[in-house]
Length: 281
Image (cartoon, rainbow, N blue to C red):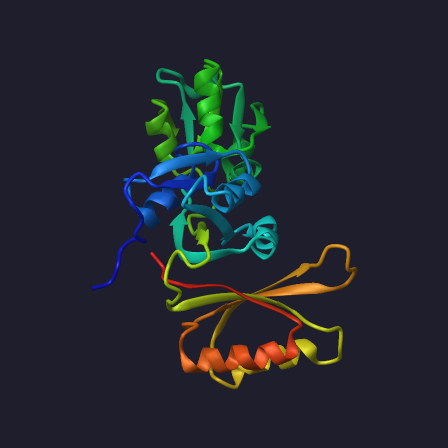
């Protein structure tokens, strides 16, 4: 029987960036279930560190969005830390205009939210051009902020969960410009906590600066009919014009084809690491 969530003990701490009611919090519950103990973190670095230093069992972080693209900071953190991808999930991002109960549109002087959310709701915000737009570190955090400060002349853009958790009212639903707005999230754990294996595998590797090096590296997968669903390059700090390459493969790392491809790639790549082979929820 197919699993519908990743197993962890009831009450296990799961770290994520943002406040309760954030999209990352929602993704954590989708992967692990509602019995988790959510651990809200101010930054992605803090969420990674919570797992490294055993303050949390796992962390859930966004890695890419269908509109905004890749979240480069988290690719860099994956290479820096020794954590492993244990699972992934995707969420449709639906933004809502949220206010104090009893507040109407005419009373709003400011709208708070994360810069990405403000950017994804430009159509409505252009119509509300007389209202000040205020960037905030987190969508759900913006709802908490206007509630805690009693800002009845302010609104926030965030999820339905955030409105419910903080006892606020949704004034307008589904205000995002593009309904096909999805974010992909990864669940990260210390290496060895979960049995590696699943229909998707992520790796990172570095190559020597030689003609045809990347072509040769990618050919190890083409020769074995392994589908590459994503490739991302990131600069290596303190090594100008040198890059790490991140690949997502539609293959289980335990398969003979994948094992042979990795063996071949290790002959070409001075640096190689399997980031995880994992299920999707």
